[in-house]
Length: 355
Image (tube, rainbow, N blue to C red; front, side):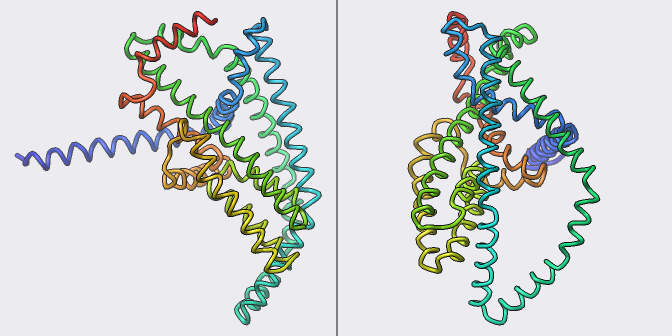
């Protein structure tokens, strides 16, 4: 007969192993079915961002189907226009950014002395294999077309899911009530609503913060006369959706281009602009905009980004934080925090009266 402490430790170990096994199986299924799971998560994030538009349209006499269609059409126009602007900025600024980065590398190599010369020689040797790279890219045109086809298919699927989520999202609670007993259905609905609220808070807050960061850094680089300021601002905007990593990489690129074009003094001013914006974001914008909806420790965010990148590349890094925020929201409900079933019942009654 084992002592009670050992039995308790064995029980906890078995529970942890079971939890890790189930979590690993879920991750495996999600990765294997990524052609469907990734568009679904993207659709949920887009729905969370656009959901406030639906009550505004419905209250003005627009049917839910027409409101969802108008919202999806606006989403397509906004995404297409935004991508076109970003790509145009990056394409026009890419030569200046690439030239600036190369000059910055040469200048840093000269500062490092013999070590910098060896590094520069190694980079020049590796760049000599550019023809091989071109040949490999040319031979992979078909695979590239296959990737484009997958992206288009995923985009169409995500757009269709956004339409159905917007049009029929108010019916999900009633459907869950019909399939499950009362108390359990309230808990499931509370978990879903809290997870949805967390994703909505992340998407709205991150988009607003990304726009503010990109605008101020673009203005700062423009005043400093840094070439490719528009493209660097676009990089800052896109990098904001990958916490820490995206801001570090985009800020580093801006400082290196400033170093190559204007020397050390301009680079220091550019670094000051980037750091000032990041400090304002961390101490003012993040607490003010996202503190009530996304409560994740920075260490948790970094681990989530690295894990997401390891599982699904850049898409995983982009989706890691909102998915983690949704998971934290579910845990808060299960522990009796926000979004409890009792509050959910009164909220659902108010929604029914509005609909």
